[in-house]
Each structure stands twice: as structure tokens, then as C-alpha cells.
Length: 472
Ligand SMILES: [Zn+2]
Picture 1 (cartoon, rainbow, N blue to C red):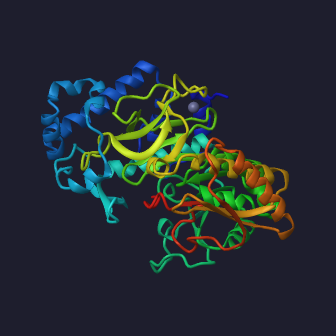
Picture 2 (cartoon, helix red, strand yellow; picture 1 turned 180 degrees about the vertical axis):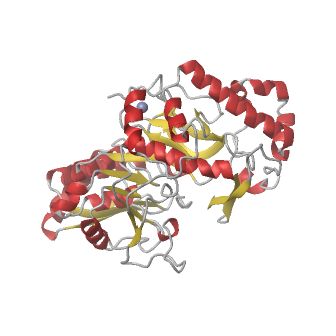
């Protein structure tokens, strides 16, 4: 499947700016950038990088010192390939050099405008200071991805997320359990574009209450965490609520191919995805036509690299590094996102010329420390559950795997009593066939509606004692 500049301009027509003060409209500037010829794409990247790197060289203490140490002079910064010579920036280095990474001298028109934070390596949050432009890009890039997803802004949206990520109640408190908050417009975009109404509901509500909310509100679009989405899709909904639902955006957690198939099969709508970091903003959005992630090249440069920092060949999976182009306040160059993704070759089949990468395989640290075979066995379990759900809708309501310090698995499954024995035997068979070259750790299968970590901020369908670091 493909699209074109004309088709995208057509699709953008339902987006009405509230105050038409941006000329040319920035959403259309972004739209046209998607179809630039390759040499123009390269030129934009070179110019954006040079501007940022020279700024780092001139006035950001951390990089002044680093460039000196690496014998990189100012004239080297004219060529975009210099990026590969800059050492990878780990999260621990940001914590250590927070002051030296910041500057008070900004670009004309930029103002210091606040901060974002993310979980640090020591349990303390890492704070990233931003310029207004850096933070402001988020809503424009959000609109771009919603256009790609063909979300119609005149329709309604329901967000089921952690309370801390949702708008507050009128008195400033978090939205209480079993309460949904109606908003006059879609989150993030409401200030910029005319949109329909939206609702917000905590993801810590019981799955049954989430179903009731979807049935009552009948939203056109649903935004929720991947693991929550998977469990939601296993529930029974009112037929008219399902009919109204046209699109869903899975956020935050890794969505495996098996989870994607399960949700799309159960809900009969496409699942959209994006890739972002609190530290930088929206980095890429998954192409509905081509299935790869298109990088928002106006906002960042993404590299997929081997452990030594050199570029992966197409088809190889490597560390995902991000260079943020719009934040002169606290520039992050080649920031290690702690994720693995696949490098891809050539342009996407959709016709857009933005750079792209393939499947995101999840947190590097999560996978790297797992005993050999774990990921393959977990994938086999998920695939078996997917096949069961595809045959027999609503048979499995929820599941969760836990791996103890010896590598043994226990799998919790919530399903009807009558089907449990069959489900368990099918899952066990798949588990034993996966990664058969090593002896299998024990697999215990429990029939229960009690899950680990519930009531916490995020439900996780896979918990391992080998990965003590929590997910962001
Ligand atoms: Zn594409």
C-alpha cells in the first residue's frame, strides 16, 4: 500500500487550526517534508545537525570538553557523518553531568520552558530541561501521526492510562477509580486544532470497569498501554461499542507481533503505534501502510548501531540512539534509548521519504540479562494464547508470566473453568517445543484472576527476576 502528497493533503483537510496564526501552516510544512526527494532529506538532516553540533561545540560545557578529547574540531561538524565519531550518551552520564549538559544561551526565538523526567538508573528521576520549541514540537508531531493513522479529529477519543499521565480533576486531584473524566477536546491537540470530545479513565481500574466505560462512551478511538490493550481485546464488548471503535493506539510497552495479531483479530481494527521518550518527545510513528517506523526527522536523528557504535547493516538489530535536534537547552547527542530496533534498507513502500527503522524489540536491558531461551519461550506462550483466542473469542481474559531467580516460569491465566485444562495443555506443548536445544525450566500454570503488581502504576504481562530495572 502506498500514499502520496495529494492523498495526505486531502487527509489533512479535516484538521482545522483553532487560530490560523501559522503561515504556512506548520502541519502542512511537516506533511510536505514527508515526500522530499532523498537529496533534500539529506540536506535538511545535515543542516539541522550542523546547527546543533556547532551550538554544542561553542557553548555547552560537556560537549566542548568531549569534542576536545575526541579531537573533533569545529570544521568537522559541517559533515553529518561526524555524528558516528561522537561517543554514545548513556543515561548515567546525564545524571552525572546534568549541569555541564545545560546552557543558558539559546537560539533566537527559543525560550527555556520546563522539564521532563524519566526514571533514572539509581531510582532518582533524570530531569531534562527543554526549550519551548522542543516541547512545542510534540503536538505538531502528534497531529502528523494521527493523520497517518487516519484519526478524524471531529470524532471522539478515550484514553485509558495511568492517572499521572491523564488530565486532573477540576480540583487538581487525580481522577479517582471508577470515574471517567469528560474533556471538551482531545488531549495535547485541543489547544491547537478543533477536535471532538475526549474521555480519560485510569488504567488501574478493573478490566471489567474498563469494558463498561468503553460500552457507555462508544469512542471512535482508544489510546492505551499495549499490555492493557491486549487484555481489553480479550473481553466481550457491546456490539454497538465495537462498531463505533475505528482505531486504537497502543502506547508505552512493547507490543509483540503475536499481541498485535490478537488485538487486531479480536477488535477487527488496525493497531497503531509510535515510539517516544520522555527525554526527547515523539521520535517515530509506525507507518500504517509499510509497517516500519518513520522518524520525525525535523525533531531528531535516529541511528541503529552495534555495541561499538558503528551502524548496523539492514536486517540487523541494534541499539537505538537518538539525537534531539530542537533542544538547545540541554542537547542530547546519540542518546542510548535502551531499546533494540531493526535497521532497514531503502525507502518505505508507502512513498514517504522520511528515514525509518523496523521492529522495536524492547528494552535492551530487559532482554540482555534474561537466561538463554527465555524470550523464545515467552513468545511461544504468547503465540499459543493468541491461537486459542483467535479460535475461541473471550476464552482467555488475562494472563501474566513470572520468571523466578532460577529461571522457572509461572503463568497465571484467567479464563473460564471449562476451558482451562485445554488452554494449559496447549500452552505447555508450545512452551516445550520452543528453544528445545536446552533443558526447559519448570512451567507452572495457574488458573486465577489474581495478578502480580496490580494496583501499581503499570501492569506488566511479563515479570522476571533477572530484570530488576523497572520499565519506564
Ligand atoms: Zn511508510
